[in-house]
Length: 221
Image 1: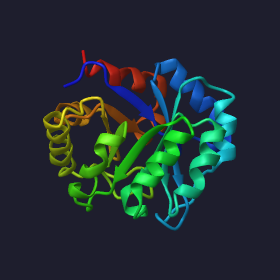
Image 2: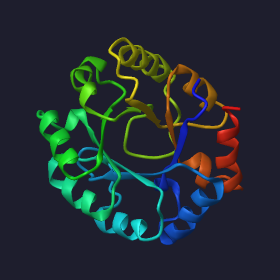
Image 3: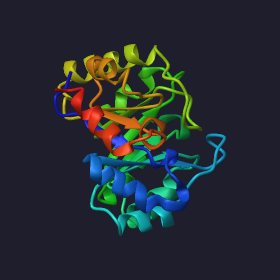
Image 4: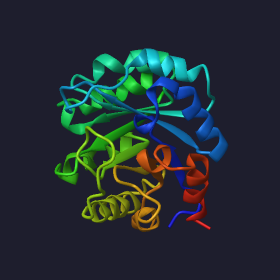
């Protein structure tokens, strides 16, 4: 298990009418990243936020802004999110037939690159491009809505990706996991090989969100 994993609270589970308070919660708990779920109601059955919200958030925080695009035609949104202040932009391998072009586009905008994979997508779909990305995001629920339960088979997928990265001298690539992550299962997910944990409802729906963030970080002690 890594001793320096990053927690990325997902504002999808925060109060959208008061996102500045969500940022203060992340500051109070010393979360590393802010995770922004972008959904277009086409690639996934939900509609969330766009570049203007990221731009507003950027003006209120210096934390690493992790934008996860669950959208069709991701190439159309790369530049708007980069201009808005994204630090990392993740696209879905299922959303394009030309992942190399999207990777090049994200790089050209000065952002780190992430590629995400749905639970039922074979890992072989992403292996050919992992040497070109910074983050591989494993969806441990079906993307679209927060509050779902962690799919147990995700841990085996995480371990397989970790082995592939190690065998191919790609340890610089981080494994991010998103979906159903709770305090009670986070340690086992880290032990499987995760480097970054996305937590939404577990943080923002808790009685004490700041303490919950701190409790996550205690897991690696």
